[in-house]
Length: 113
Image: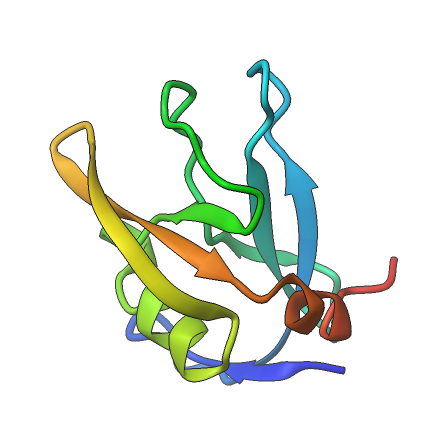
């Protein structure tokens, strides 16, 4: 199952699925979400960013909504993946968002390798 995705950097309209992983270099590893082209298996982008010192609850991730990921937060929210923006946090010179996510919805749209 997939969700349609397009952005301002491409004329393509992708069928997108998700791969749910973890960033491994922390004591309490944070979740990582990759968005995959359902037709080719190519990683379109990583929706999350890793900030090792940030403490997250089990249903939270840090969404990268700046630079090439501009518009991703809104797309995830519109499709029910992000259910709530909890807070903004500093990520270098940019802001990232700690968000609650619906992991069941991600699993329903999970890419099958």
